[in-house]
Image (tube, rainbow, N blue to C red; front, side):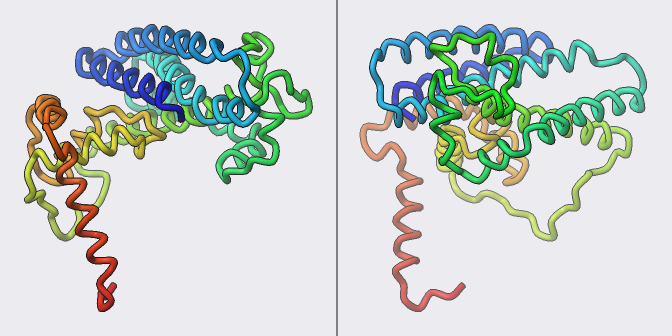
Length: 282
């Protein structure tokens, strides 16, 4: 991903993180997230269309790996908005039935697009020239109706389908989390078995904050769309630590004159030293 678009995605994710902190109501949160995401996508479109002449490799990379990450965020928040606004008012049985129906809808889309799911998941490239070059649509390749309504200067036959794959993964996690929380509330017990030992973070909070921001920036959770707050909460629970005002800590890290990633650099040095030890055991 080009540096320009990577920075735009990072900034968008940060804005969505702040919305998540600011608002508790899922419908209001989704509405605001949708509005901001649409504005950023329009800006991405303007930036991309400034390039009047690009190679096929650059075009494929943009529509396969860059644009879908932005579109997926729109699809995800729009899906959550629809799910929450249609959520029935009733007991757990009614709500559980509704959520399971939504999960079945995701499964149906997966089944109807299984060939492309396999192509995308396995990292194939031999059909990229058909899927991710503008104007190369093939009606035999199961096109979404959205393609025929899109601006073909900024759409290929399958970039939206990639975005839906990414978004559906997130929606599935969202729905399954709601079911899990309902089960926890009803049973008043943890849904997962406790580990035998407890892992407590004994390093500094600043060091763990470095790791927190590195993971979130690199997009290693939930296809790069995991919110900073959720990752931080997960770290706090797993490592039994209160990170406190980790955003302020990040500003202090950013303000370092030298060695901004001090802890991450030390991890690299320690691991390289271990790898180079000839008598290292597994």
